[in-house]
Each structure stands twice: as C-alpha cells, then as structure tokens.
Image (cartoon, rainbow, N blue to C red):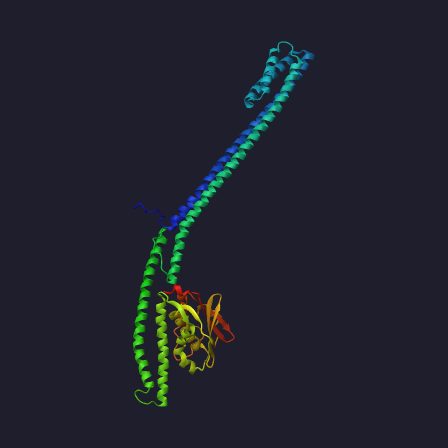
Length: 472
C-alpha cells in the first residue's frame, strides 16, 4: 500500500452502516451516562429520604422520652414510690440508647454534646434526688435538638438539590458536546457520500453537453468508483462516436459536393446555351435543375457548417460592413425571392460593426434561408439594424405562419423538425437555426426569437461591442 493511498469504505452499504454506527455511538454514550446519573441521583434520594425518616422518628422518640422522664420525676417527687423511680431509670436508659444512635446519624450537631453532658448529670443523680430544673433542661435541649436536626436535614436536601442541578448541567454540557460530535460525523459522512455523487452528476452533465471532462480518480465507495469508471468508458466511447460522426460528415459532404458541382456547372452551361439553343420547356427544366441543385448545395453547406462549429477556431474580429455581409447572404437567394415574389425591406443606410465576417455570414445566411422557405408567397422579408445598450441588434423577419409556443424552446436544437413545414421541393435538414445559434455563440453574440405574433416571425442577432484591437 502506497503512502498516498487513502482509506475508503469497501462499499456504499458499508459506509452507510459505519456512518450510522459512529453517529449513534455518541448518543448511546449520552444515554448510558444520563441513565447512570439518574440511577445514582435516585439512590441518593432514597438514602436521604430513609435517613431523614429515621432521624425524625428518633427525634420524636427522644421528645416523648424526655417528657416521660420529667413526668416520672414529678410523680416520684409526690408519691416517693420505688416503681416510679425504676421506671424513670429505665426511661433514662432508653433515652441514652436513642441519643447514642442519633449522634451517629447527626454527626456534627452541636446540641448532642450538651445533651450527653446533661444526661451524665441525670445518671449521676439517680441515687439521689434529681432536680426538676435539670430535667426541664433535658426537655428544652431535646426540642433544640429536633430544631437543629430539622435544619441539618434541610441543608442535606439543599446539598442534594445542588448536586442534582450540577449533574443536570454536566449532562447538558455532555449532551451538547456529543450532539456536536454526532453532527460533525453526520456532516463528514454526508460529504463522503455527496461529494463523489456531485462529481458524478457534474461528469454526467458534461457528457450530456459534450464538454471536456475531468478524468481525476474518484475516491469514495466502491459502487461510485465503479460508476465513475463506467463514465470514463462512456466518455471515451462517445468521443469515438463523435469523431466517427465528424469523419462521416466530412466524407459524405465531400462525396456529395463533387458530383453536385459537376451538375451545377453542366446546368449553368446549358442555361447559357453553350451546347445550343433551348426551347421554353428545356429552359424550364434547366431552371428546375439549377434551383434544386442550389438547395441541395445549401443543405450540404449547412452540414459542413454544423460540423465546423462543433470545434470553432479563433475569430477574425474587424470592422465589417453590415450591408456588404447582408448582400453576400442574400445573393444565393435572389432567384427564390423572385419566384415567391417576396418583397425585401432592408435598411437604407449601411452600418459598420466590429465582428467576424464569416461567422456573421453564417448566421445571416441561415436566418434568411429560413425566412424565405417558411415565409408566405408574396410576403415580406425585412432586415433592420439598430444599436441598443452598446450592442448591434440585427432583426430578420418574415410574413408567415407563427412558431407554436410549445416549440419555441426547441427550435435551436439540431435536427428539430416542427409542425410548420418547409415550403420547397426539398425537405429541410432541421439544422439551419442550430448552425446560426452555434455561430452566434462562437461569436459571443446572442440569437433569439424577438417577435412571434400577428402572422410575423422575427429573429434578432445581438452583436457584442468588441474592439478591433481584440482581432486575431
């Protein structure tokens, strides 16, 4: 294993299970810790409650015994009977036993030593006469013991409550830390899964748009790595198919163009009556051959343009006469304009704009061809120039059927055929507008449908303001 190798989960399932285990572990630790703390708090609470109950019961017994001792002393002082004296001594003994036990339960109580001293004096005076003031002091000290022990129990309860609050705060802090750890783990594993998925989505989009792909190795679960390898294969396969398509288009265009050139030259020679005079019927046939050969040449040139625009070269940006470019684009269509008796409405004044003449010619030629073939006979072809917001707007419109609203988003897609049919002897290729759009993109311009209402369709070219110093 090389030092640069990074660990990755064997599969997506293993990564998900590992993520679940690691995310749940801090929460499990929190649950166990909270459970242990609650059990300990409950145990301390039960112990404190038992101890408090025992102390209160013994306090009550001491209070009763102190009253009984005082009562027995008063009875003995009146009756002087030995059984009363014996009962008093027995009560003092019980009091001593209860006080000794209470001294362990109420450790540190300041009243207990005083009670023990008083009790010693009482025990020493049992053979003689016990003074009532001493016994009354015993009763008072017993009451004071009860008061002090109650205060001591309250302090213990307050301490237990304070411990409960401290435990609660500690649990909240622990919960915050563990939840943060779980959140970080969730974020980490979500990135471990979502990042390669995002890269795969980006690669799929790049494949769909024919863009250059990043062939960097993908790190992640095995399934996603395998999918990335399949995308590598698919990209290579699509590149091979694209190259085959381009070779086919170049080959078929060349093979079609060679005999077509001979056909056009022959028809032109016959139209010029080089081989002899023509009858009216023969001239009509020759014109039909010329018109259809021109349309066939237009389709071939569109295929060549479409193939070239897939890999556009550098632009030759320089000041260009828009009228000159428009004349070049209109010239091949003059015969068709006359046959369909379409009126041409164009700007009365020329305009100069920095652009690539060849790219602009492709756009104008395809838009004019589209307007003529889809326009009405005896309709109108309109061309206008206008500078707006630092851009040159060139509008090309025709009178004819409108483009259906559901087709507007698709008209610039290659080989798209809409409901409206091309009006001519040959069926359209469906790439004229696509070629115009690709040329506009290569030029840094924008081509859009500007008007589609009232039996009039207008396309707009928006040429950017490019300085001649950027010409290549």
